[in-house]
Image (tube, rainbow, N blue to C red):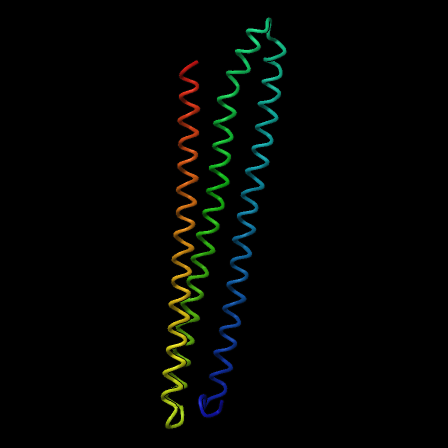
Amino acid sequence: MSNLFPNQEHFAAATKANFEAQIALITSLTNKAFESVEKLVDLNLNAVKSSLEDSNSAAKQLLAAKDPQELSTLLAAQAQPNAEKALAYGRHVANIASTAQAEFTKAAEEQVAEANRKVLAMIEEASKNAPAGSENVIALVKSAFGTANASYEQLANTTKQAVEVMENNLNTAVTQFSQAAKTAKAKK
């Protein structure tokens, strides 16, 4: 190693900086995860509170029904708002998950880019100090690193496409369900 890195302090500093960057990333991602969980907890608490209030109101209306036809009308009238609330809840959950996923992806991409930059800098530094005749080994290391990066990029792109397809499918399903609910309401 002394042949490749004439300054051991430089290598130690780079290793320490990389470790500190990893800790910062983990801390940041942990905070983002807690924020997302907090949003989900708030959403669920609000949904439960709203549901209890709606159930109480609906029970009073149903108990006040004077005949089976009025009861049936009240039950049918409550179905549409409940479906819309379920859709809104699903959208909120999907939005929280999508936002968290986007933040995690961005942080990971930034970390990978920084790590790649550092590794390439270390390879360049090592190649400057490599003994004569080791050019093929350095070229092989650079090639392997390039191949690994290309594989990672392909995986990242494929994952992004899969997430986009999933989000589009979810949005399409929500839109179709909303349209079906509106059509059913219009027919009444």
